[in-house]
Amino acid sequence: MTDGEPPAARVVAVTEWTMEMADAADLRPAPPPGGEMAFTRARVPSADVSRALYAAVGAPVCWTDRFPWTHADWRAWVERPELSTWIAMAEGTVAGFFEIEAQAAGDTEIHLVGLTPAFVGRGYGGHLVEQCVRRAWQRGRLWAAHSGPAARVWLRTSSLDHPNALANYRRRGFKVAAESTAPKTVPDPRTAPWPLPRDPRTAPRPAVAEELIT
Ligand SMILES: CC(C)(COP(=O)(O)OP(=O)(O)OC[C@H]1O[C@@H](n2cnc3c(N)ncnc32)[C@H](O)[C@@H]1OP(=O)(O)O)[C@@H](O)C(=O)NCCC(=O)NCCS
Image (cartoon, rainbow, N blue to C red; front, side, top):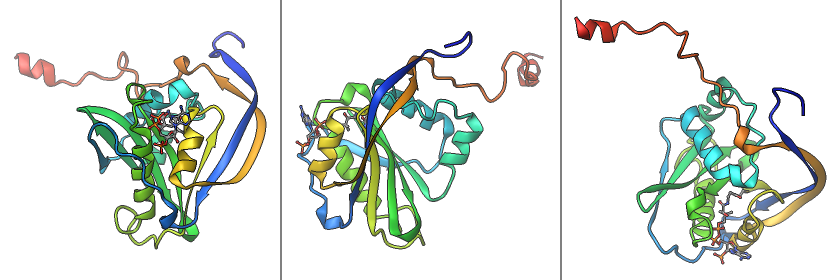
């Protein structure tokens, strides 16, 4: 580490699994969660909201790959029509989210899925993944119109993710399609950069406040 760079840690061996489901009938429902969980597709894609969810869900499990993304990078990612972001609410609180993308040849990729920390380990995770996979199979009807029917749902998970993640995917019916292990350098999640799109100290002040006073 040099001055000005966030602290980083070298993880000696990170195993990554590619998991897939080739038939919607393979999806195995999870036991119902203790409380009601509601799912809404974000019809106004927001770089700010997605970045906040990414940090809230991912910081404890080392989601760091998107830390270098600028505001423009996030906008370019979330505003694509083939990507949909879903927000899960439980107990009046944002409890989790997922990102799914309609890809060529009927593939649907689950890029991210997870619970906010207060909801982990309380029986919501199986239901979250089940509902995520249902929506991934329903592309074309629900959110990616004209993209054709889904033929495969797939995702990547790693040994840095929550220890329940792999078991959860298997229990929902996913199979491991590929596995690889390599070292990885990860920044400290607490140091996530989130540069403001403009500097509020130097940006021109709107005249509205002065107009209101006079
Ligand atoms: C992965 C995640 C969604 C799982 O949710 P959870 O609240 O930890 O787990 P749940 O209690 O809902 O259990 C879901 C499944 O996990 C597995 N699981 C739960 N507790 C387990 C344990 N002690 N040992 C082994 N497996 C366990 C089971 O397969 C269970 O399936 P079942 O409901 O059919 O029995 C959640 O931990 C999370 O969002 N973590 C942070 C983000 C993350 O890691 N996302 C995955 C990225 S790929």
